[in-house]
Amino acid sequence: MSENKLTYKTEGRTLVMERMFDAPRELVFKAFSESDHLEQWWGPEGWETESRKFEFVPGGVWHYCMRCTDENQGDFYGMESWGKTIYSEINPPETIVYTDVFSDEEGNSADGMPATQVTMNFVEQEEVTKLIVHSQFESVEALQKVVDMGVVEGTDSQYRCLDDHLKQIQHV
Image (cartoon, rainbow, N blue to C red; front, side, top):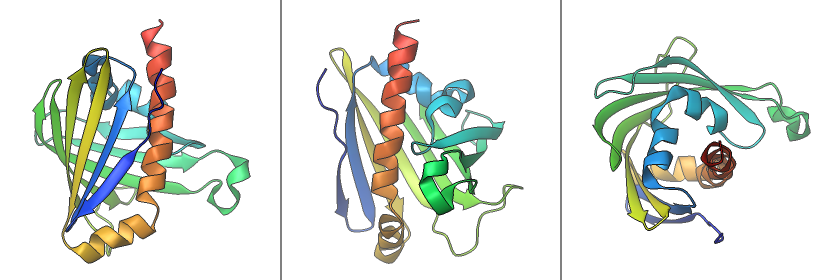
């Protein structure tokens, strides 16, 4: 197995992240397109995710809550973070395009938090998958705000959780 490191760069108001996964493209896509799979790995290490609503179709919504369950994470322990994804384009197993927003428990967009237009490309390379994620923000300042909040570190942690999940489901 190769070392799968998250690489990233900013291009204006766009954050581009890339990462390899040691799994076939269809399986990596499935991990992003089915609620049962997402709940097993979505969120940083030490957090659990629960789907309130999941409609994986263009125009559909995924409304979810991440909860910190790791007592070693100090002030984060017990914290909840609600999010909402609105899917606009789905081309299995190649592309998912959606708008990502912070939300409240009812699914209302959080005031003062930037919405993000996300395009995920799943590129098959023999038995591995390269995931390329373009996250476009409304401004360079909005991009910097989420970078300062730790989006790259959080995504890196989340993708390590996905690695573990992919290993489990490949050997079932």
